[in-house]
Length: 154
Length: 142
Image 1 (tube, rainbow over the protein chains, first blue to last red):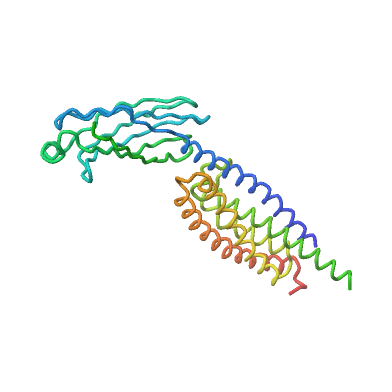
Image 2 (image 1 turned 135 degrees about the horizontal axis):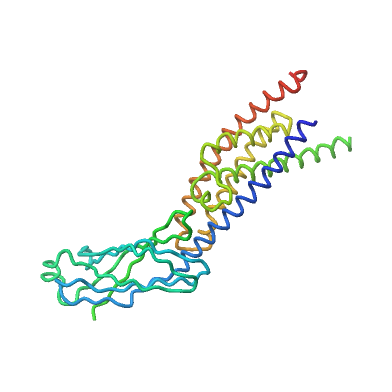
């Protein structure tokens, strides 16, 4: 009887401690995904001049959450139709405070200027796809958030 | 007759409480020692703690129930409930954020299935440990 009660007691203490630990972990996991979901990405500047010049872009990352977010890396790909014609990347390693936003200017190189000149025409149907790596806490693995933008010909 | 009936109900509810406690403890130890939730846990364990931890929980559950057949049924119930708790802990963000719903529910399903097997198999090892403890503590029962 004593052995049974002792086992019950130890199991109760373990359940209490591990349960509280699980609840805290699940809460943190949920809050992290909400923060990632709250982030908004905008590309107000997309300036294409000619096939030999890089495409000038600006990516604005806004953080309306109440947690600081660090932007580690940004990768952008430049497509025209189904063809990948260029891109660029940067590692800003900058922190966006709660409720703040930050603008990241990026020049996207055109790798295949001949194709753009011959086939895509004067105002190609550009699509920018990319991903941004953000980190909430150094103890938590950073995550990649993917996005894509279509630039309609002017 | 009435006394035997009420004693049976009491026994049933005590097993139910043991299953609930073992499920929470099992889900907690799986969460604190596997990817996803470990990074967010106030106390995180190394992966090496997971299997011995599940054996200990299985042994405690078996000792607390003190009956081989009931312990076996309770272990299956613990595996189902423990893996379900773990599933909802991982899948919870996906239930409210549509962008990660498919990915997280899929991930939670895989990990919960793994948790089910781990809790069942290593809980069974814990039951064997409990019988060995009983043999030492109460040799007259054998």
